[in-house]
Image (cartoon, rainbow, N blue to C red; front, side, top):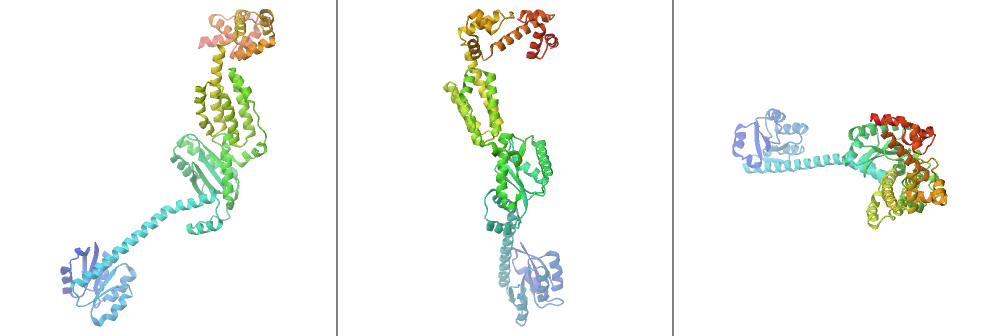
Length: 518
């Protein structure tokens, strides 16, 4: 409802208009009446009416003076002026203050109501317009930070024409000229929610202050900061960000930092930071990577890499667990040393992985094939190595179990001889081959290693130590020289003790005490 004030020095007119006019039908309410301009202005200051219907000719302060004074303080208030023919010049002056409705006395109820209705429509349109403009300003104020962020993100992550940059700088009232800057990228590790990306962004914004911009780029958080040339200070701030974030979310993060450069080369600095971040494939997760960490990369990446996957497959098929793990360790260490393009490194891993799983039965091979995508998507070479080792161990163990049941008659004889003559201090590969089986010792040794996965001497030592442990567990009082004699160490109990400790970590006597305490 719009509030209306009636002003006229003739009481009969104000009372008549108050009663005759249907104020509510026009969406208005009669707020009050006044007898002159002075009284009216006091009411206007107190009540702030929307519309004033006033006579011009009044004592003290006439209607024209009231319009002039109100226009200076409350220009939004609308007026309807009532006057006679002789006061028309005054009415024209009032119109210069925005008064559009001038009614000649005597005027009827309809003309006054028509004027008020028109003013109400004007006020409604004006309020709607102001509300629309206000909403637009609020919307723009809310959108502006994101628009600025998007501009700077585009400037850094894509090629931007200078003329476009100048236009948007003027539009958003930002100045990003001639600053010496660095690009810093944060990448969360492990499983995380997207809200946690914004959490580390907020933490970094507080610690890296002042910064030129911050934004999210996919799963990363990007900061453009001024390069102050004090790397230790920046490293300290980054460590504080990582520690604070870990304290709240128990999640690690990897950070990449570009070298300093002019902001006009921000896109190149961004690419440099991306290169650093991708290098976590070799350095592992959770570090802070700079260009210094990858400076040697291009110097050795052209070196040729060759690996004999057939040799590796022979070891897997033979069930030689230890040798397989050693080969994988050597294989991945070589890749780490070369630090070639990540896709090339992954292709070498996939090539060896495929060669290995092709040794399996079709059904098992297809099962392992389904994990190829996961293997390719792993973020670090350590993850690939760990997964590869587990699969290799599984496959090798399966072959070992098969081979164990397929030992040749000769090897079964050798094992029987070892068990029967374990206490013979002359027991050796040459003794078995020459005295028992009448075979070539080198051939027998290779055959034994191939089918058991162990050297003959290692196998004997392992069997003797296992037998020694059984004897120690059975005896209440450990007599080292007796045990040494029973398991083939003859009259050299000291050497037996050394061998026993090498394999168990304890001397025979210590082992007995530990077993009793346990």
